[in-house]
Image (cartoon, rainbow over the protein chains, first blue to last red):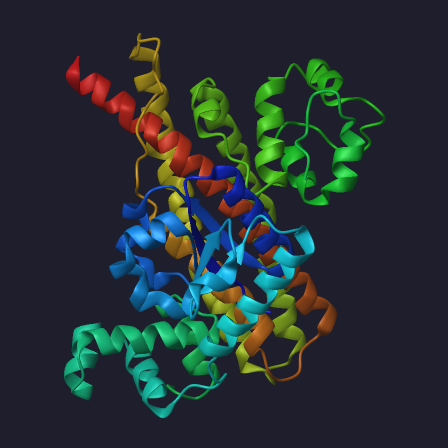
Length: 179
Length: 234
């Protein structure tokens, strides 16, 4: 099962440690804990799962609404009060919490699932990366923005499990994409 | 996992965490440890028990990394440990992987070009790691020891976090990529046992290097920059 990354934002450190432990041991989710919203604000896109207490979520709705599909609210009351948001009541018993997290992660991974193979555009980008072109050169050659190139590269790395340029180059040679 | 402490028997610790066997050698401890506790072994070998325990704990528990405690140890201890780790890379794990890789390539009798490509990738990682080891041995470690000798302040190592991990992140990424290429993308015929031996050794190197980089980058480098700034201000 691929490893997912999560961030837990809450001032309640003990509660965060508990959630982190459950995520790590039962769901292979590597979670970081923070008490500071500024730590995650700039890189919120990087996390596949965001777990935030209700205080922080409500205080920074502008940040979390665009990330709603991957956000889970930690509450001490009825989880259903958040309607279309995903929420966990952390005061219920252990089995209910584990079941709730399991259902939410299943939902998140279904939303985020990608096909295992590369698209033709991604293969094109991979070929140019392996040939040693910079992101800007690739953007110019394919008439797309640098952000789109970065997005393709991120998808390629996720699908192949290969991050480094040297690794991508070797993969491209192994699969006849470059010679 | 519960943290290791001085009363635990070393044999039990090894049985619970077999991967620490490679760490023990760096403290001149070898298999056949009997039923001695950590404290008894350290006393017999005249080792710093607290330092030994912290290293074992950071190795056995990825989550555990007490930065402030580590920064307060004598810098010579930390450097000595990193030198022993580098020796292990240079004289054992890297040659071991390369030998097995060459044998794997030979056994494929030119019928699997993937193995040769993966070997080339490994050699690139090996060269990067050896270059870093050389640079650390020739410059970094001696510079730090010299600065430490000239430093008289008591609060020596309450230094801020220093972020310069890009090159090491890249090295860790490459090793991770190499593992994934074996596990996910390897095709063609190959000697299963040899392939498993290569992969197991690379996975072991990956874990070890990750621990080593934490100590080098989060403990030693901040100390180095603190000592450098102290000297510049003197």
